[in-house]
Length: 387
Image (cartoon, rainbow, N blue to C red; front, side, top):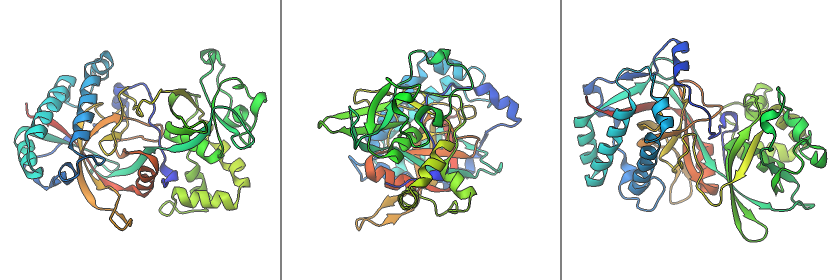
């Protein structure tokens, strides 16, 4: 499993705050001139890969999830004051319905693209530089081994949100105060009695906090899924960024295997670095449900993205042009620059501004390997029907 720790993010159920864009002083999306849309390329993954992550059925499923969200009162409120002219909930919803019809009827990538160019206009994210440069990373649902009961091997708990959490005074306790510098505060923790499940590796437990969900293979042979259940009132601090700031790694070379290797060779550093992220995540058992994004609908591997929901239109259809990693038949990593249709269905505490996108790449080790390789720049476009 690999992940670019310096840029790890969460898929969390955060409150949408579209009007905050007005405080930023700019507009995050600009309409692309019609004659400049042709260079965006074809989504080749839709054809020739049935049953694989990101195939046509996966995209159709993701579209249906967005439509489910757009029919909610939350969506109505999110779009009420959206400041980009012409971007409305109704137009986003109609665009999805029409694109779904085109996707079902198209027989080739070129046929779909031609129909899209006839009927849709593209809105480009201004990115980090007002020129459309967007930084892409990946996230995934990890799969770990865990135990319903603590043992000498399984010592590191994930916690439920306490019943009286809303009455906790602020600032909330720090991570060290909740779990101890070594992660083993146990019965002395304010969270004692709220343990949900125990993992055998402290870093794995911490990474579940970072990813926001996990699929756990229990020691009794069953499978348990957990998802985001709340958090303390601290900003997210990247442990990878801390390592980079102290010169242990460069940003470009840092991956999860490198971090794991470093911490295995220097286990005392766990106590030094992990407590620096005071943002503590609570979990709930999700009874086998797929990982869910901030819109309250499942996220789909290779077809869901996380963006800053104070800026970007929630649930909308988008096209990313980015270096999406994969592995060839020999198992060697490749980083092709691809065009891919996605749905904007999630957010994260580390995903801020118009120049950040986190791509959900699925569950398990292969998804984690791919997520660890995704760390590059590209472009982000939203598709809307012509008025």
